[in-house]
Amino acid sequence: MTARMRTLVLIASGALVLALGVYTLNSCIPFSLAYVKRAKAQHLRDDVKEWQMLSSPESFGRTNQTDTSYLWRTNLVAADVSISTVMRLDSSLFRNRGYLVATSNREVIWVGRDGRAEAMSPK
Image (cartoon, rainbow, N blue to C red; front, side, top):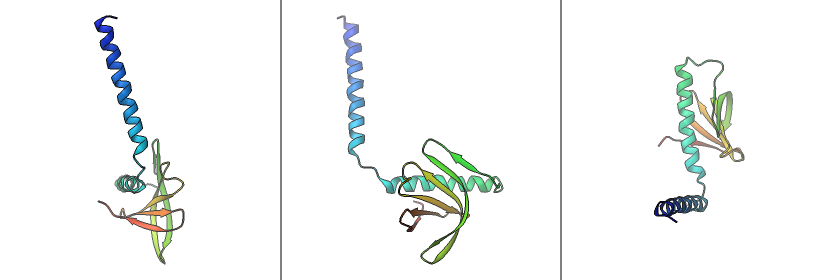
């Protein structure tokens, strides 16, 4: 093998080892539902703000690879308090665990599949 070939093989081997290391590390780190909920709550706040900046049209929705946010006008009852919601965010990252809803003043609430509601304060 020539020196040039050896260098290419070393670079390719190093890249492969690095990729396998990153994949292994990603598998070892536990999935943080709390972090994902906070991040998606901010996305939902931004979507509500954009919807309001567009003069609150009757039809509004946004989707990407993992999330779908759309208008969802309903009254949510949590702890004997009725909360008027305007938008909902569903994500494949927490589809089986619950969803996020937002009010017109951009307060975001996590609604678990067990029916419990939890306010998501911005941080």
